[in-house]
Amino acid sequence: MSEHSPTRTPILEATTVDRDFGTVSVLEEVSLTIESDGVTALIGPNGSGKTTLLRVLAGLLEPTGGTVDFHGADTVRHIGYLPQQPAFRPGFTVLETLTFYSSLVGETEADALDRLRLVGLEDATERPVEALSGGMTRLVGIAQATIGDPPVIVLDEPGSGLDPGMRRHVFEIATELADDGTAVILSSHDLELVGRTADDVVVIEDGQVLETGTPATLCDRLSVDSLRDVYEVATAGEAGTVRVQGVSS
Ligand SMILES: Nc1ncnc2c1ncn2[C@@H]1O[C@H](COP(=O)(O)OP(=O)(O)OP(=O)(O)O)[C@@H](O)[C@H]1O
Image (cartoon, rainbow, N blue to C red; front, side, top):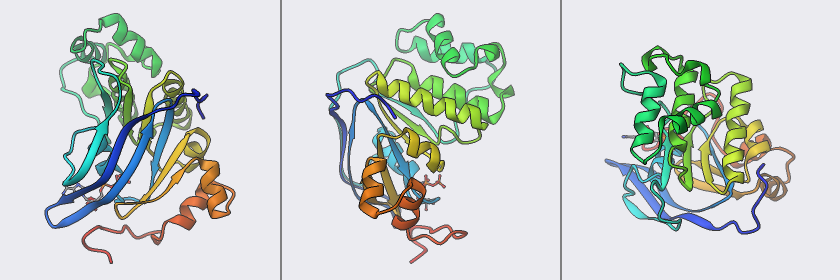
């Protein structure tokens, strides 16, 4: 959990956001306030709408209805984004790739190297990006998301495919960014790490927000002891079945 600044302020505000794909409604009337200086975690079953909501919050997907408002400072880059499946153009090394993205916001190769050190990839700088493992590719993606020090950083399943030590490290990076004032929004299925790390938790199912609050508030509200129990009590999905919007009733 991050050391809260006494002045956490709303930086991103979703108001009654809908997102449809054709006739399928994936997000329904999602209203959410994301504050600076903290880690906000989206949790929910497979297919519940987390990626869709993160892409809408990051400005990569237009909402079909409702609005997303950014209240932050006018920085060189408003929002950094790690996609669920990061991919980089083949034929370039890790350092060349990160230096290219850095140059777009006036940063140098030295800055790119610092960001690679942050995610533990200092020994992989000369490796071609197409020769990276899945976990290493995700780490490059996390480094890329921090370029330009955006006030909002959106990370879609940053711990996915990482070994336990690196997964913990990535959540520590999220906490450090939050301690420095960033609003970090991430999705994760690792409820234990989320429970230990997140300042705010958003439980989502079937494209709707079921609960929001600090881990402790949610435990109190639902009279349970852990975020895993919050998840079990709040979500109705049956283990072993993916509820598919537009198909499952
Ligand atoms: N481009 C699209 N066209 C049609 N349906 C889509 C599209 N993108 C997402 N969906 C549907 O929206 C629903 C939510 O998907 P989303 O990827 O947001 O879920 P998620 O919570 O991130 O899932 P997971 O935990 O499995 O990554 C799913 O039913 C998915 O099939």
